[in-house]
Image (cartoon, rainbow, N blue to C red; front, side):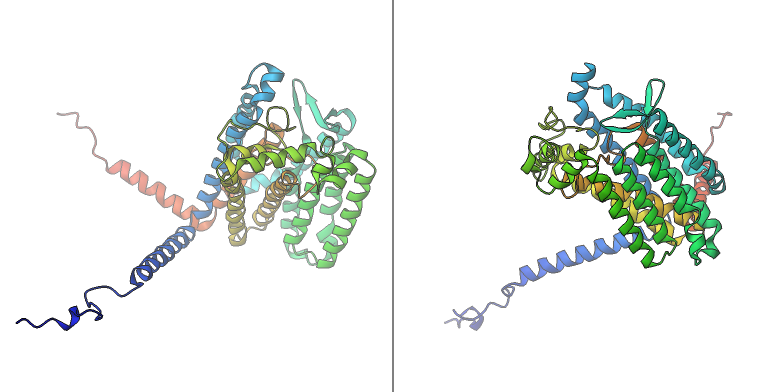
Length: 434
């Protein structure tokens, strides 16, 4: 008679069977190892010398591509009803891209010393153009901020954003050792920026004036202005903004109704309400490119100021978060360059450009989400408009150039060029004797 194995007796655990819950533990350890390994790989990739350069280049290119697709989609109805051509608006945007991309390439290659030499002439040109707008400007959508140059209308305030950043960065770089003195910190940058803001306000463009004020505060913060100066500046700017809004019935109506656009749905709340409709109908992944319903006349400025709403409707929450992440990727990479550079001009100019692009993006998204009042600010790179796109692309080109000139990045690029040249010279040549 065979004796039963005690391990096979009912109630006795089988030693060959894994303990209860071991599969869950193993799966958790696998997930943890994958996450840790992925994080380490990401850190190693980010720590490479050319990481900032490629992040800036890739994020800018992807953002520009998304912008062109969304301009095509958001403007198709407006272009058909206005120009009898669904592609009329995107064709113009492509023309500006054809000008802006080479300009960005030149900006990325031009030496920093030449950029600094252009700072003062650029600022003077911006002042002259803004003065011409105040005298001969064209009124569009209630704002006198456009200048007619033959068949093309340009918005000099967009050019002024980049011009004042480079001008202020050049001055602060010259005064690097004297910036602890309040006089050198304020003069001539603050009066010069106030002059630009005043000329913009002559055309009733409060939104652009607020962006310029944000650039001013950002530049002062970068150069180490005392906190009490920020408190005073914010107070003055806040009072001035409220006063300017209170003297204009349209602006006052927008400010008093932006928190609840459905309160005045047929008037001041029409645009933000339909922007919320567009976002809410997009869901996680959107209705698909070209499938927006709000762009069929319900949403004003669908391809300019409120293109983010159409983007949310067609690409969903995932698409909107992708666009926001691309802006923050540009900001992250640029700040890395600014923190690692030894050139004060590069540091100040980089921070100024980041404050401009990121701040304007936040304002535009806040408008669409009805967190901020509608003040007519386009989404950088994405919205339609050559006057805004061209300076933005040049600014991104400058950032890319700053990144590729960092010592470690420049050394890596030089080594890559040497390796490529060595590979070409070592390649077998065609034997003509055979």
